[in-house]
Each structure stands twice: as structure tokens, then as C-alpha cells.
Length: 201
Image (cartoon, rainbow, N blue to C red; front, side):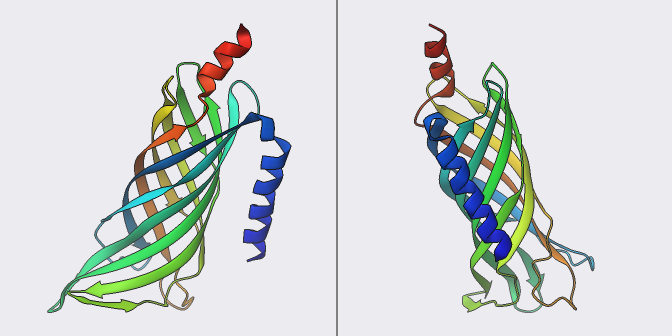
């Protein structure tokens, strides 16, 4: 929790220090997630969704920092006999802090650390859903991706989130890491490219 508090405090400092350069926005999209086990347990991908807020902070004409606050539905599924398919549903509030390199044609490369806060976890088999307390309350990961911003402020991005921390609360059990591919749309209320064009006039 100390790491989480430090991260959140750093976000507030960034916002206060760069308030005149912030471009706020909203975003949402689709997740394809899975859980990786180090004991070769096989799981199937789970389709979920994500949505939230972003703050795009310019450090220069080509570099920016983008903290986000994202609700994300993640997890996996696996087949059991004779019960059928079991679904693991993990609901996170994720706080990525991305460093972005911005090309003049609207494309962006992005990557950085992400802290995840588990809101709830459930395991569902057939019509029976139970709370699952076997997962850690926090996770650490690294999102890497690419985005494109249009002149209207509407954009599209794709990223892969590599799980770094073991989210299995039982440390005597297998190491479990959450990996997620995300594809989505975002909208910046103040378009950075228009802002640049106006500043050059």
C-alpha cells in the first residue's frame, strides 16, 4: 500500500505542476485477458471491457506523460469435468502512468508502469458464482502500445499489458500473472495538434 500511496501522490504532483498543459480525456475499449501460471496450468482467454479517464501532460513537442484511471474487467476461464467451464472474473481499478513519444502525423508510442487495485474477484461455474479471495489486492504490470490521435481529438490505441507481479495470494502455490491485450477509443477534449497549430500562428 505504501507503493500505491507514493504513486497516487506523484500523479497529483504532476497534475499541479503542469496544469496549464493538461489535455483531459475519456476512453474505453475491449480486453482480451488471460492468467499465466508457472505450473503450466492451461487457461482460455476472457473477453472483457475497460473505461476511464486520462490526463495528457505535455513535457515537450514530442514527449508527454499520460496518467490514467481505468476500470478493467479481466480474468480467464478453464474447463472442469464434469462441471463445465469455470470463469474467473477480476475487476480492477488500474492506474497506468505512460511515457509517450508523439510523432507529428498523430501516431504515438507509449509505455510505463501500472498499479492495479483489485475491487472484487469471483469464480463462476454454470450459474453458481462465488467470491474468490485467493488473489492479491494489488498488482504491478507494464503496458506497451501505440496510439493515433486525429485532428478532431478522437483517437484509437492498442496496448499489451505484461503482468509483472504474482497475484496469487498463496505464495506457496503457483505464480499467477495477469496479461491483457486492450483495443479502444479515446477522446481528448483539447486536441494537441490543433493547439500546436494555433501556437505557431
